[in-house]
Image (tube, rainbow over all chains, first blue to last red):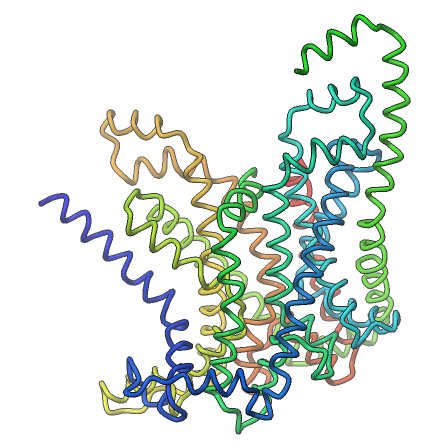
Length: 278
Length: 294
C-alpha cells in the first residue's frame, strides 16, 4: 500500500513534467500532419492526418519555401564547418595550455572564459559591425567564423578540464622516450581525448545549426541563409502559411534531436562534468 | 610503463636531462604554434569587435538620449524582472526536479530522455509553435478556454505584462532541462553513504536535504545561477520570437533592444545600451572567471 502511495506521488510530478515538455512539440507535429485550416480547430488529433504539408515543403511548392533544399544545405554546410573548425582550434589550444604548459596559457584560458560569459546577443552587434569592416557580410564565412568564435571558449574549457585529468606520467614518459610535441599530440593526446572531442564537436555543430540571431544579422540573401532565418522570415507576413512553417520547422528540428540522442553519452558525461567542478 | 622509463632515464643520467630541457623549449614553440589559431580568432573576432563597439558607443550624447528613451528604461526594468524572477524560479525548479530525476525508476529515466528535448532542438520551431498556441482567435489555448467557459480568452501577447510573463515562461521551458541535467549530475556525485547514515539516524526527507544535499550542492548552485544570468541576458530568441518586443515596444529586454536600435540605424544607441550593462556584468564575469579557472 505504502509502495503504491509513493509511486502515485512520483506520478503526480512526472505527469505534469511530461505535459509541460511535450505540449509545444506535440502542437508542432499536429500542425504538420493536419490539412490546411484543420490545425486551427483545436483538436487533439486531426480527423484526416496527412503528409501533404511534407510534400509541399519537400517539393518547395510555396514562395516562402522556394529555397528550402538550398537553405537546408547551407545549414548543414555551416554547422559541419563550425563543428570541424571549433574542434581544430579548441583541441590545439587545450593541448598547448594543459599538456605543453605553454607560457601565458593561463591568461589565454581566462580570456576565453571571459568571452564565454559575454551574452551572445551582446557580442552579436559589435561582431556584425566588425564583419562589415572586414567585408565579410553576406558571405557564409562570416557566420561560420562568428559561430566558431562563440563556440571555442567553452570548447577549450571543457577540453582543458578533461586534459588536466590525464596522468602526468604519460607526458614524462613521452619526454624521456624522446617524443616530440606533435607525436605526443597524435599518439597520446588525441586517442585519450576522443570522447571529449566528440562531445565538443557535437556541441559546436548543434550550436551553429540552431543559431538564429547571428544568422539573420550576418546573412541576408535568401540563397545564403540557413533554415533558421528562412523560418524566421515567415513571421514578417500576415498571410504566412502557418502549417507549412510548422512542417518545415519540424523537419528542421529533427537532425539536432537525432544527433543529440546519438551522441548523448558523450554529451552528458563531458559537457556537464566540466560544469560540475564548481 | 612509466616506472621502467623513469628507471632507464636515471641510468642514463645527465644527458637525458639536458635533452629533456631542449625538448621543453621545443614544447614551448609548439605550444605557441598551437595557440595561434585561437589567438587569431580572439583578436580578430572578439577583441577588435569589442574595441570597435566601444568606439561606436563613445559619444556621451548617446547616453543622454538613451536614458531619455522610455523604451530603454522599460527594457531595463523588463530585463531586471526577467533575470530576478526567471532565473530564480528556473533554478529552484531545476534543483527540485534534479531530485526527482535522481530517483531510480525505469519510467523516470525514460521521462528524462524526453525532458531534454526542449533544450536539444532549435528555438524557432518550438517558440513559434507556442506563439500559435497563444493566438487569441484560433490558438488552441483560447479555443479550450472558449469551449470550457463560453467566453473569449485573453489576448495573451497583446498585453505587455502577460507577454513578458510568457516570454519568461518560454525561456524557462527552453533552458530548464539543461540546468536540471547539470544539477542532477551534481546530486549523483554526492556519496550514497551519507544518505544511508542519515537514514539509520532516522533523518526526515527535509533534514536530509538541508544537512546533506544542499551543503554539497550550494557551490554548484551558485555557479549555475550566475552562468545562467549571462546566458539569460543574451537570450534574444525567447522575447523576439514570441512577442517581437511588442506590443508598442513594451516587452523589450536589453538583448532585443540593441537589434531594434540597429534597425533604426542608431548603432551608437545600440552599443550604448550594451555598455551600460557592463558595470553590473564585469564584476560577476571576473568572479566567475576566477571560480572556473581554478
